[in-house]
Length: 243
Image (cartoon, rainbow, N blue to C red; front, side, top):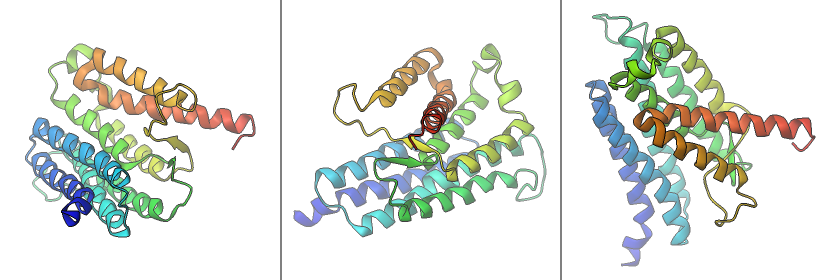
């Protein structure tokens, strides 16, 4: 029984990578809605594997390494594949891989670098330095859902967000944010009080509002809101000499 309990966090991590692999297959088959559900499964498993390790008081070096390997699939390869497919739609080609869409995997390369950096960076215990890979993946998932939504014309976003030039811009921006020296808060709530959680509760309130208004189209705007809040806080701290 003790052996089984000890491996609950690792099991959740393996569920993360399993969902990531399934999401990848769906993306390559252009089954974007199914891919989004598997990506959600990866995010849920990724959240609870660390929480389970803390609750059971069984953190391990094995678990840490396994978590990074799983994240590389679910939050490294998957967002690259999403951007690849979105770009490939602009440049039909019989060549495999599609040369015009291949820059999408620059995000995968920077995700790999970010995960290795995270494992060695002792500053990233309470928060993050740079964007966490799940946030990058959620943003790309938002673009993916936007590309198949019947609300796209209503909101009028795809004409800008999904054009090739903008997608290349997102590749560059996400790659930069993944390794940027910008402090970003995690969603680990320290109690339920306002003090010490001001940015977290503000973000969660805005995220909930966006979900209620935009529904499945809210994911990309939520991540944009998260990044802007963090950059604003970072610049404010720089201005006041608090960094």
